Image 1 (tube, rainbow, N blue to C red):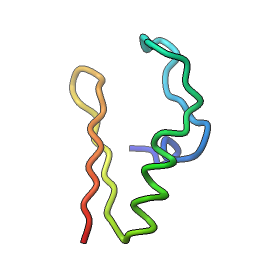
Image 2: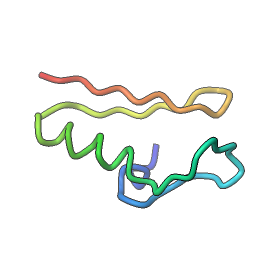
Image 3: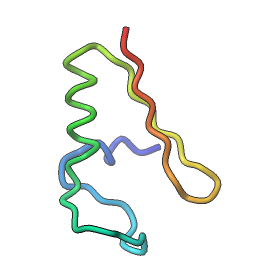
Image 4: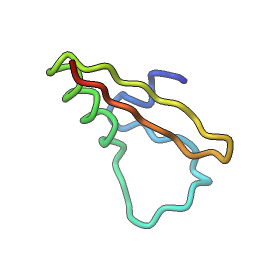
Length: 58
């Protein structure tokens, strides 16, 4: 999984159906919170194209 998805303003695939406009900040915020608390952040793609994000706090 490319780590670029955790950078601000990054969005993957324009073919995705969006219900609202976004700016690509969600995963960057998640990463900042995880880093601040020493948590582990893992992203896994699902077979149908979805994404699982797991945050494990110490």
